[in-house]
Image (tube, rainbow, N blue to C red; front, side, top):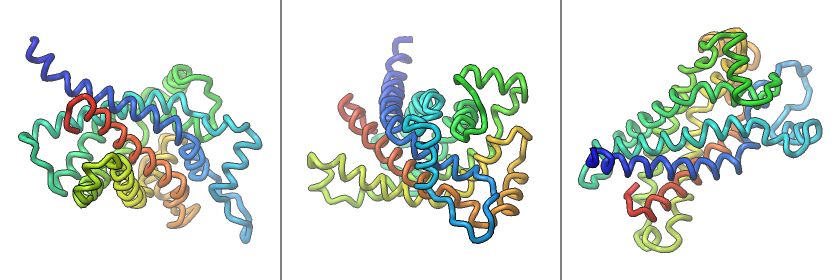
Length: 289
């Protein structure tokens, strides 16, 4: 029993480090997530020739109508989702890496994709009900007061099934994002000169690698994010096919890239910060991340 606890201990440390890094990044970048959700759920009611509604327009509108703190609407479910979610992701990632890559062998590009995608799939399925509530909070279409109240309301009015709406789209977004991110991030870190990776500026170098990896991964997975958002804010139990058809009919191909700028900024900066903080905390605990 003691042996088992000792073996589980590093994974628990990874969970704690991941949760702390997720707390910091969620608090800082929640406004970008809210703006992204609002952009993706805008109704196509603009007249031909009307100016496009962009990120800054939505940002200013939220501040004017809901106050500056309105930008952090949905931060409660974001915390409930990200603190354990990022912890589950990093502890799963650490456990998989320790199990399949013993003796410190670094995964190659293909293995890094599978490692990142596998860890994200586990975390995504575990936290999907809170993700649905978070998306609805941010959309501005629902008047939920608390996370628990929202969970109760959804179960009573739409059934528990609604809490797992958008599962396919979520996995199609999150698993590839994480897989692509881990691959690019690990490859970019290896290309850093030894004088940088062993210097006090190593965290800054790692952050730069994370930003580059995040941009590439965000662009590839943007259409799946738009589909997921539409499924989760709709009370009509849309399928993935229904959402794709609606987006294409209403907005064309460009509709699949709505909210790309705020999402890319948020996902890129959040992932870069989370990985940098996680690796620094793990190093302080004497563990190799």
